[in-house]
Length: 318
Image (cartoon, rainbow, N blue to C red; front, side, top):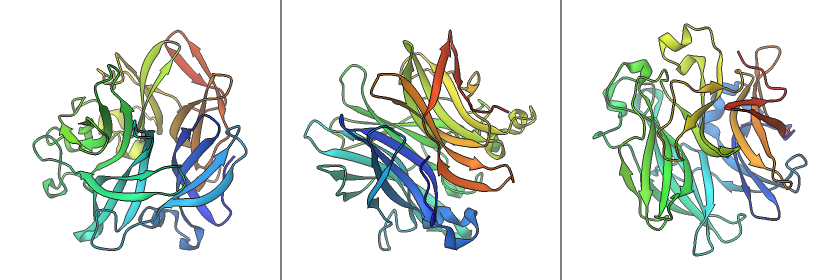
C-alpha cells in the first residue's frame, strides 16, 4: 500500500519506463482537516517502485501555477506517454477558480527528459460549446473537462486524448460523455466531437483508461453514486470503478452495459502489467469501515478474466 502520514493520496496514474514503475498521484495535506477541501490544494507527487508494492517517494512533479493561469487553483489527474522525440509528455488537468465557488477545468501539458524534472508547456484544450457543456450552461457544479488519457493511434496516425466531459444537451444528470482530441505531434491538439452520446446513465465518467485484457478492448472509467443519473442511482449501486467493453480503444464503447468492478470503497482503478506480463489492478482507498475518506493506494490486486467477465480478487462490488 502507498500512503503518506501527512497527506491524503487519491487519483493516480502509473508509467513503466521499462526498468521502474513511476507512480504519479494527487495529494494534499491532512492539516486541512476536512478531506473534501483537498481538491483545491492538490499537487502531483511522484514515487518509484520495482514491484508495484514498495514505493520510494521522489521530488514532486507539479504544483499549481501563479495566477492568472489555467492551473492556478490546482493540478489534477493526467497521464503520460513517451514521444518520438524521446521526451515524456504529461497531460494533466488545470483548474482555475470561477465565481460562486465553482471551477473551470482545461487540459494542460508538461514535458520531461527523464520523468523527474518537468517543464510546463501551458494550456492546450478547453471545452468547446459546439459539442461540450460550459459552466455558463448552469447544468453542473463545475465546467467538467479533465482527466486526459493519452495513447497512440492504433493505426499509427498520431495521438489521442480521452477527456472527462459533458455533452451540451440531454438531461442534466445524464450528460457524461467520452471527450476526444487528436494530435499529429503531441503538441498541437484539435478538439473533436465526443466518442459517446449522453443518456448512458452517468452525469460524468471520470479518469478514463484504455486496456486490453485477454484479447479484448475495454474502457475503464469511474463514477460514484452521487454522479450517476437518477435512474441509474435508483438501482441501489454505490458506484465505483466501471469497465465497458469496446470495439477498439476509440470505441464504440458499451457504456450502458458497463460492468462495475468495485464499490465505492475503491476508486480510480488502474490496470498495469507486472514484470511477468500479468495484468494487476490498483485503486485508491476511498471509503473506510467508518464511512470516512481514507486516501491511500492499494497494493496490486489479481485480475481474473472469465469469458467477458473481469473480476478483481478482493474487491467489493455494490
